[in-house]
Image (cartoon, rainbow, N blue to C red):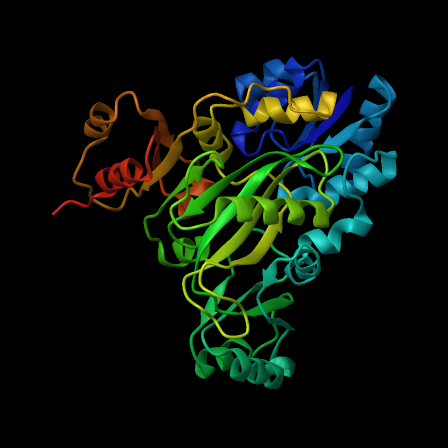
Length: 407
């Protein structure tokens, strides 16, 4: 089997996906914008051949590299980056090389535009926030009418975009008018504000569109607030086999699987975000209802796949390789499950407890600690500690200890 992995060098821990595929006998062929000598040593040792290009936005060059691999190794079976940024690139390469194990350009709008995603969510029976699209001053009157209907605050973000950058909360009419006083650089989606807890349905699909493995990640704060306000936060993975603190796990599992089918996700990881309403909202739902936020056709960000592994006592990387090669998950799934917590700290904040104190206090429960790469630090924090526990209460005590500020 020939698998072209686009940008296997970024994020750096993506070498784990390559290792798992290579361990299953897959011929992994990389196209990336990091020179060979700068690649992680584990990526170097598990990739069959690597084609360096200084600019992956130069599509003719990327297509040329893919055709080189096709001519040298034979028909390409998969083309993936597992990176939201390159979804359109992956799709166009599949189209041009006749690879049908993944999305094509005609699929892009419904998986990239947040407004277009709503139809798939609704087809699965999920609630969605009311919205309008805006481009600038010409949409002010429509935006004012929308605000009158749903109330302030409003939340705006690029309709097609990656991450939480350029996302804003508009608290009143003045901020709405200021936002639309000039032409926007791209189309924005303007949605009603939801007072909710963010959770995600994360997993991997098989070739039939079934969620062969799934779990839940629960976030203390919205990512947009973390980015805009530089606040500390934590999140944790809650396996479906364990009790939940504030959601109906069976209902969420059923809804998540229906959403996966509605989006037509096959042979890939997914990260689907929902709000859980903290209170009733007229025109939207009742307290505890799930409201769809967005669907990401990639693994959850940062090093969350490792956190998921710690919680579920599995390897999502091996599960993915199983599904690519055999069409089924062949991993042993009945190992003990845990609540796996990720706590982060920022260099600019003085903390009560030292690194060594954390290591000593949570010896035997800590699974991983280290520094986030610079590009992730604004969202995730500078340093991290991952640990797993048998109860949510223990996990929250861990977060409180790690994040307690000095003074």
